[in-house]
Picture 1: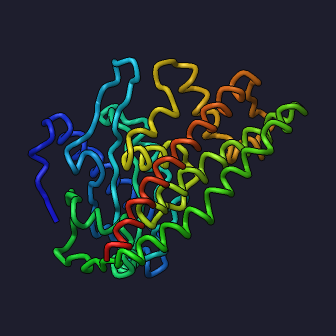
Picture 2: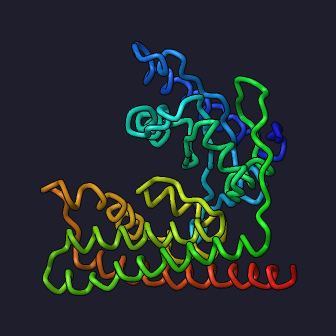
Picture 3: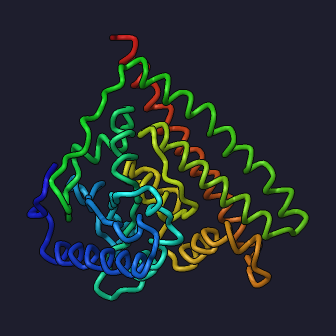
Length: 304
């Protein structure tokens, strides 16, 4: 696994060093004073940069018409599965990364135990295999390598990806069908929640088809970043050139919790109409990307 960040500008290297420091500080604070043995022995084993900034094909064009910027994607490996609980150990770190003035680039991260990562590698999950191959280690407590990844046969890869698509994409489409009725009845909170789920399931479909993995997250910004990192065509679904569009997407992102539980959550009909239109476009793009990938897998399986 690589360790050099020489391909990145010095500004990005300093920013990533700041990110690593914040993650360590917030994790240490989260486990401090714990009496349980797993907390007392809790450790971050590795922090690995993956995605566009690791590969070298990142985009940072905030002032262009599309306003697209790649995110930092990190895999945090800990020594106990209990320490992967996001709300308990990592929510404050995420909030601080969003607010810290020294971190201008949006930072997304997934947390898994070393056992989980090694199991996924031995099962041939492309997501972790790609990280092992292309990732850059920003920090590691020890030099114990991750497991050797298993390679699925072309037939296995096609079968697994096809199952993911047929199981998940119809669910995403089904969620969309109820939105017009909810909007007609002016049940805007329910419409927002259903749109959130339609977007979440669309991204989950794509990530499962392309990588055999999707994180346990309801954060649409995070899922969007991972998905667009796999195929940048997906960025077309969410224009970034107008502030109100960004605000509406963020409002949708809040809907998973607030549309159900907060009496203060509000969203306009205008916003919902736009969000429904863009979600429909996202579904079209996800279907296109997935079917192209499945066709390539099927061709490879037939050749083998």
